[in-house]
Amino acid sequence: MKKQKENLNGSPEHYNSVLLEDIQSKIGLVIEGMYTIKDELKREIKETRDELKQDIKLNQLAITKTREDMSAMECRLKQEISDVRTELKQDITDVRTELKQDIADVRTELKQDIADVRTELKQDIADVRTDMRSMEERLKQEISDVRVDMHAMENRLTEKIEGNNTCLENHEKRISVLEEKII
Image 1 (tube, rainbow, N blue to C red):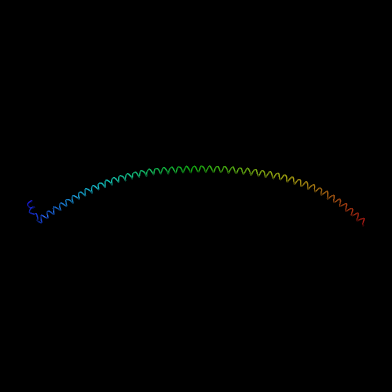
Image 2: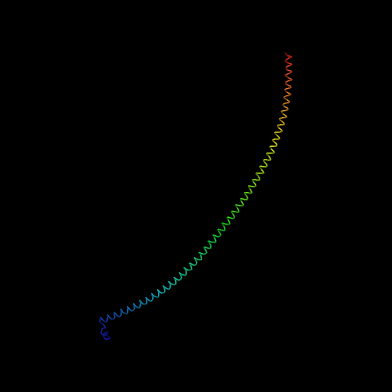
């Protein structure tokens, strides 16, 4: 075969064979480069996978932590809402109690005021009754006095009338006597 190769030096077969070796060498280099690239890609893919796995783990941890935080926050919020409800219920109860007490106090004050007004009115009515009785007594006394005065006046008038009648009779008699004398 060596002989054949030597014989082929400078011939087209030789040129083709050199070209073929060169192509095979270049293909080998390309294949070797492809394997290198393949290995590099595998390495990069592995690194990317590892990074993604790490990121996924971190994300899962973050999600878990966030869930825990949200759960804790939900518990705190539920407790705070419960506390606020309890406080509001207590405040409402306190306000109701205060209002009931205020209403009771106002009722008591109003009852006392009404009782005081009734007492004052009763006293005023009693005073007015006393004044009216006193006035009635005075009026009765005045009427009695007026009756007595009128009776006395009537008696005086009657006496005067009788005196005047007597005087008139005396005058009439004198007039009659005078008329008789004149006639």
